[in-house]
Length: 139
Ligand SMILES: Nc1ncnc2c1ncn2[C@@H]1O[C@H](COP(=O)(O)OP(=O)(O)O)[C@@H](O)[C@H]1O
Ligand SMILES: [Mg+2]
Image 1 (cartoon, rainbow, N blue to C red):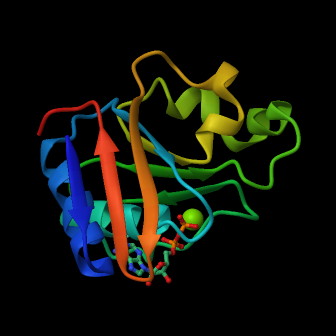
Image 2: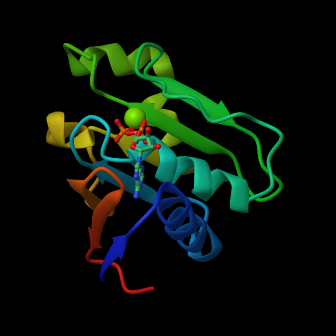
């Protein structure tokens, strides 16, 4: 699937569409440069699952956990991580094998820790408000 989002709202709507099809145990890998819209995608995804939690970039914390009406969402950002050993203390290895859903920004920096079943979502910044969003998953 390859779609063009012409606004941040459209990127969030696509996140919501993914959430409506997501199953516990799913892992989504978000690829794209800084400012591409990975965190906005997660915002739309999580909003669809009805949460009281605010989605913030886990750039410094590596992980944020959101409780939702459906299943827990584990939001990772590997951008500032120097060594994948840092993941041991975040609960990563428990979460990727749990009944929650993992969304991982910059997971492509450490492909050795990404499970085979992860679904890649690539966001490309085209212009100020336009993004191309590509994934191998059919929705
Ligand atoms: N179509 C769009 N999709 C997503 N974000 C957009 C879009 N157009 C503009 N933006 C802006 O781009 C930025 C994306 O930020 P963010 O989601 O934090 O990026 P990332 O997590 O990939 O670094 C936000 O400031 C958002 O308002
Ligand atoms: Mg981000």
